[in-house]
Length: 191
Image (cartoon, rainbow, N blue to C red):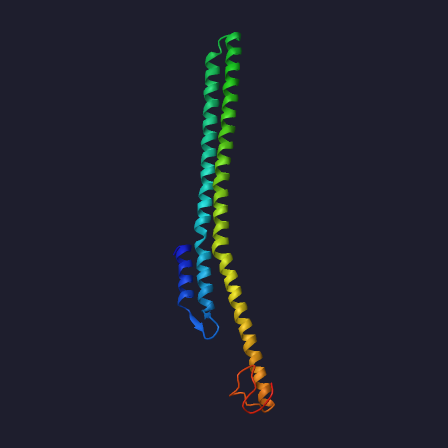
């Protein structure tokens, strides 16, 4: 499954979850949620594989540039050897060979810089995409889960406090079954 399909599955779980009466909250299976989060983590390495592919492309481009550089150097040496008949020709040949070698080195350096720039752009896009995925899906998901658990905890604390009040009223002999919270009961008891 893809990350998006797993996220849709999470949404389906939330949409179809049972509600907790009187709270507006839902109950979900924590293990099921954690299993889906684990599947999402396992799916993300595909994006990492793409980054490895980019690294391989970088190496391939650098190798091509190196081969081109070596080819130009060999060609320059061949031309220099061919032109070596006398001092004047040799001097011109050396100058020409040096110019070709310098041009080849500059060309190779330019290819390397372009390759680095291209790879940096691709890695930056990948990094931004990963950050966007993290912020869009995981950040809000964890925030929502934290709010949900906080709401459940608050509701439970409220319910416990209500139970304590009912127990206290029962202990004082008040007829709490027929009274509404905040009003005086039919038995004449006080809050």
